[in-house]
Length: 154
Image 1 (tube, helix red, strand yellow):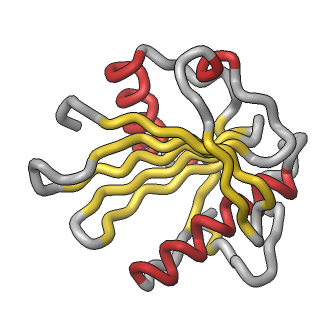
Image 2 (spheres, one colour; image 1 turned 90 degrees about the horizontal axis):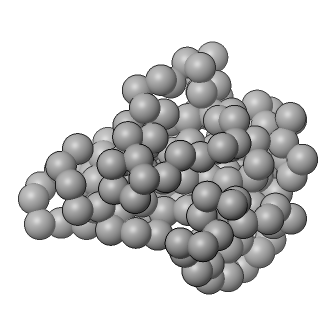
Image 3 (cartoon, helix red, strand yellow; image 1 turned 90 degrees about the vertical axis):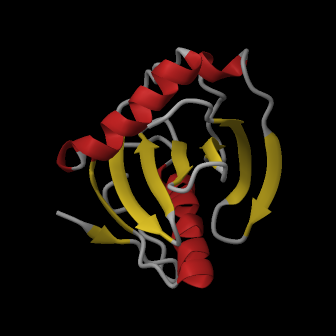
């Protein structure tokens, strides 16, 4: 069942099994606030089992572009289009959030972003490949993030 993410009253609904559920909920709320403020888009997520297209799309890009397979269990996912950009998010039990941003128009921005909820370790499958920068968020505490540019067609 889809869940509208509230960035005013942050909730761990759907993320309870994560050892960093509160920080992951803050990270999810941070994304919801961004999309509401920038695009007036309501950020809605579904259990990963109910959003296989989003999960498969992100997983395929990771595998094809960088031979990455995420070991953590996906908890929630979403996919939507806003301002000519196809977006997908997957939130994992470990506290990892992955988003794919794919501009529909050729020659525009296309990238995969990784964000780590406060309190989680860098996943083994990403540790040797990416450096993570820190940023502060009122909703999520300290977020560590990294990204790579998508080169293929998806």
